Image 1 (cartoon, rainbow, N blue to C red):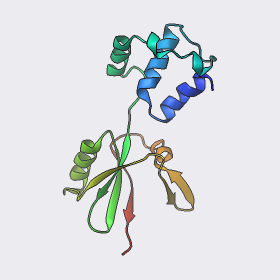
Image 2: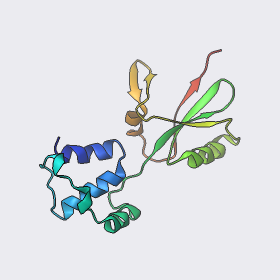
Image 3: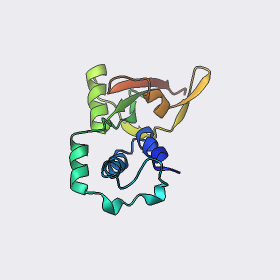
Length: 141
């Protein structure tokens, strides 16, 4: 695998810390996009400079996770949010009640939507602002 592929994967899988380290090494010309990833030496990274890049969100990476919030004994809503607290806050603002519980799901979890199978990660690509409702689930019992 080359650095360019790993760098792209960092954005795809929300690995912001690694993305910033690679960005730093590229800017300092310690590696190139065409190098094999074995050339990445994280010991050459100036952690203070990378911390400043992250703090200022220079690469514009906004990590979003997916949470299942239980509405009642049968109904659940999936919400994209930065963290559990923000998911609960968005739920309460939207539904004017407290969820019964809140659990984080993997963005790679796949579900059926219509006739297709889609992951939360792929679903997230179509959403423009966060937090956001990804969908609902009704348990049949």
